[in-house]
Picture 1 (cartoon, rainbow, N blue to C red):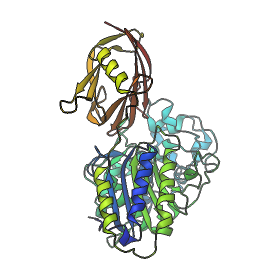
Picture 2 (picture 1 turned 180 degrees about the vertical axis):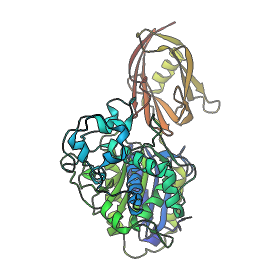
Picture 3 (picture 1 turned 60 degrees about the vertical axis):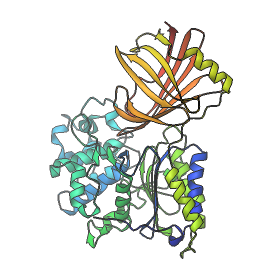
Picture 4 (picture 1 turned 90 degrees about the vertical axis):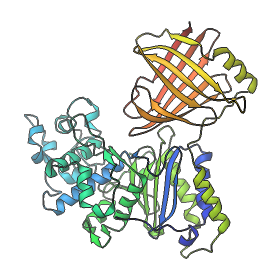
Length: 487
């Protein structure tokens, strides 16, 4: 099984203080990081996890899944089980409509890998209760295949379905078997669509170390532990610039081009890219692989902030040769790694305001007046520390469709639990804001990654709640406004 030798940053030519500066920059800009792994010269120079995440915490990797799907297709091509020039319709006759549009009929596996399908967007999102793979063939196309880059996750999903149809295996299990010497974590898996197909465009749930192993495999062009696991020519093609992306890209990191389910990057690099800050950043000119997991979904240009921190805080200071040992830098970096955590919200209201509001509303039940939401009542309870005599935690209790639920939160700290209705692990904190409202933010830290927000405004005998969820698929109940009155 592939393992990595650890070394100090200085031994790899990186000043340790640069990594500290990277971490501090992310904290200062309030980018919710979950992990950071940095490799240079094939050695692990930094590995850090933000509590409650640990090295053994699985994480949703979103569109990094596409790069895994690409490798699975490349392996099948090498086995002679398919050709990249094959028309995709030949493999799914049971999914085709009575009359197949000629653009769909002519679309090849290569078109789909290049993100040059005949669809300008993801087809299964039109109706996620219908067959996701079938939608790829039945949705009217937008343009001829092979012409223009448009990000189409349904193409990757259909390619994953092809892998599973041809191998009779779950795609990730197929990759674990074919790439066995990488030693992907046994607990890693892929979420499935409602019809049992692995979500090949965004469903990978794995460890950050799994990403680093995959990154090492790609950076070494498939040669790992003395075995050529896939043709280097396929990897070279997959990470090259085949499709231009500058016309549709929202940020510079997505404007450098696209290969076969891999992005080209700045600094002559390339990237496995997943929504929310899931990244494997390859910088061959610096012999660096950087892996991050995060949740930037609520931050405009959040992924670009990660890139820019790497480019500006670390790259300019890298040396070709090893730097002198620096015991103080090594100690500070170790302390920083040990203290990493998802930062709790900070109270900005005055002590007097907080004390007055807590006394006024602690434990009171407010009945929901807004119709047709399913919510019936809310109550907030605050707990006081016996040592500090201050509120250090609390809970938001509510009744939804006649069922009682509770969200525990910390004040100045994080509390963890299972998020109501969806049973997804979360870490939450609460804080009083200057305007007298109370804000609760729950970070979803499970197979789904995102956040759910509550802002509570208390009157003399009423409560107005604003709820907002920032997550792709679930938590739809937690959006919008509620008006409540005291019992």
